[in-house]
Length: 82
Ligand code: SF4
Image (cartoon, rainbow, N blue to C red; front, side, top):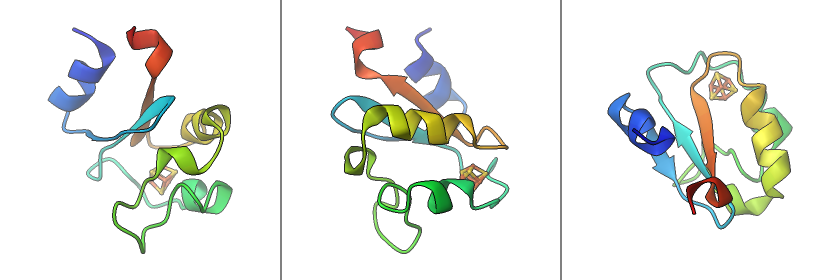
């Protein structure tokens, strides 16, 4: 199973970007707010879709996802898939 398949099977939703796809599971999110504070252009709960992966550099998006305390945010880099 690819990471994408595992995440989808675990009820994550995908938000596609050019270089990185962001995955989010709202059942796991503990609403710490880390993501929206770190990268408000990418993570904005007042917007639909609330995640826009291409609004910042992919490495910044990944660093922010790694700091998500609950694991509700995950990512798959496009170059990993090819
Ligand atoms: S950093 Fe993770 S746990 Fe915190 S609000 Fe964002 S998705 Fe939810």
